[in-house]
Length: 534
Image (spheres, rainbow, N blue to C red):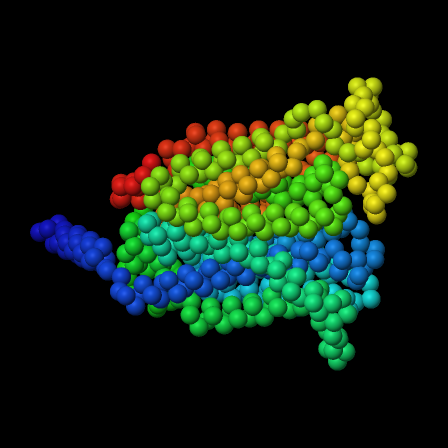
């Protein structure tokens, strides 16, 4: 009798648990039927457009001063040399690499408005600091270094932007949204130097407000303009941005980031493990993609000066035009990729993009017998390096290149201190232009496909940290790219440099081939959706 009475509470507890489970399953089924309202749809896409703007301003913050950093550095601190300039340029990427995982982690557990506003405020403060680096009586170069590093730290919000867009779009919307994000980033890189050029009309002296120690000139006006854009961005984040999240099929659902702004239900499709092999592989591929493009950007000026005897002024001017044209080409490619991916799928496009990049660098390999013109100044100063007899054998027709041109105001040609100049064939201008076109086509394809595949593989789980690591790997690639150029190209020449790049791209193609079948969306892998294209 007593045993039976003891079993009754246990039976009632089991019945209650079963009833709770049934209620939970009913809530899940009701959640599946939640349809996005028109008001929710408009609010979601307004928020995504604010993310596009944030991405645009992040890239403008990098490029708006890139052409004027060196003359401004020389003006405020004569002790700064070219090697310190390299640190200032790299400090942006170092700051972004450090901040991206931190902001990504923050956005996983708190409303994304918080890291977005704080990071943008850091960039605004850093731009204001840059405008005042002339004020201290000493160590001005270190203040500039700090300012640029903080601008890069603020740009770590790129991870938050991409993780938000990944969570606020369905699988069918994802490729288009990621392409738009990359297009905004590319437009920012293009327009930054344009803004800088407009501000050169103010001149080096400009206007001075002694009461606040502010000099408004061609060097400080761009960063103050960037600070103003940042303040506008913060206002728009508060006024328009809202937390939204949809699952892979476009059904609205809640997330940890929401604070009463959502009306959906928790996403039950988040159950399941992320394919970390695919995640690591895409991080590697993304690193390679940004590394080879960083090498391409960095090597443009010294390569054209060595091969075509361009002066510094000509090299900067012509390569500026070429890079601007590549930027426009990239924006067009981003738009085309959105339509093409619906027919072929992201993996096939990524594979094709890497092949195009490989062909672009293969074309840059030196062929033929004609050698580049040798820089006369090095010979005049008797600074010929130690070379082997084979290296000193030069065709007689190239000896004329060692003559002093009467109209040169600065040494031009391939410096003889680079011993490879004596035995490496020149890269013809047609090769260089063809390579520019191909790399300008392949890079944006690889960029947007990497982000799109990465976000789909991660699925409905919070993506902040993962996007932070992806952004950090890209920042690391931009740091190592210039180092590669300074070490490999300068000492071994273009044949070794571009051969190694081709080898790296071939390895990335092999990695892609190995993990090709694993690069599928989270929902597809767990059978919740069917793959549209392979």
